Amino acid sequence: MPVIECDVERARERLEDAGVIVESGNTDHERWRASRGDATGIAYDDKVVIQGSNPQDLEALLREGGGRAHVYFDGGARGNPGPAGIGWVIVTSDGIVAEGNDTIGRATNNQAEYEALIAALEAARDYQYDEVHVRGDSELIVKQVRGEYDTNNPELRERRVTVLELLSSFGEWTIEHVPREANERADDLANEALDEA
Image (cartoon, rainbow, N blue to C red; front, side, top):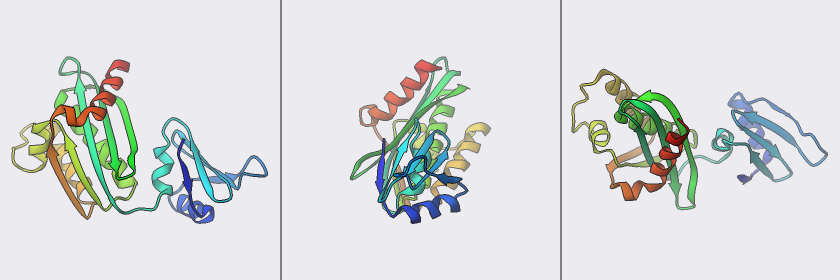
């Protein structure tokens, strides 16, 4: 349950500017409440407490933007194609800032890898990082994004365009291939999603 110390009136304005509906608090101690997706933020005098299964739905809007993040992604399918899942992690000098996983229906391993990368970059963009350093254990995806490999498959080509558009929203970015052991948390999250698929 993230707790964000902040000026709660400025935080309220930021949420309203993003189209989030902010309502009065339920008790004398609550200044206001706001919900988005699977997250509810409750404002007190000098902090906002976020509850729910996906706190990043609100947290990204409440934190001050900027800075650098390391983004890890992984996706996989059982059957190739088959039931597929994704996992991603955002890490800064403060540790793990956000992570997520999801089932994505039927897909190939490569499609799942791209979907994981897209979800991770969308989250990093929502957190308003200036700089991202992306790491994944799919050499194919990394080399396609860097332009070292051609992307012949139309579905993968479309996802590659989406990834490049997302990367262009950052002031600086890199993407590199890492061994599976260096991508363990994202891999674990993708496998958890696969177990639910």
